[in-house]
Length: 119
Image (cartoon, rainbow, N blue to C red; front, top):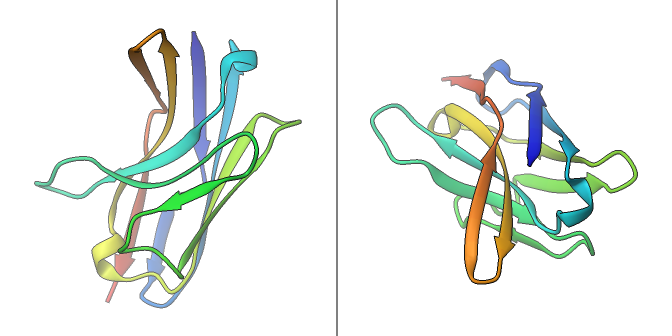
């Protein structure tokens, strides 16, 4: 079991920045990938970025060059630095940790944090 606690959302004007944090606890020894998803009103949850324990990263095309994911393995914490924010970045952002048992994937989610970008 993994517990995820997020912080750092809020309201910002277009062009501004926010930094999200997500701290993991529980079965942290089994964690490799940590990531962020978001869900805009009326839309499906979508992946934003993820990072492995070794530091390899992936980004959605819509956020490349604007968002930076990082992690502190000693603190079991993942961060999402969001710069040059756009109104279309508005949504609830969820921290995600996928764990695999064999070929079965179990997803753990944070409670979500609201990000609102005004135009």
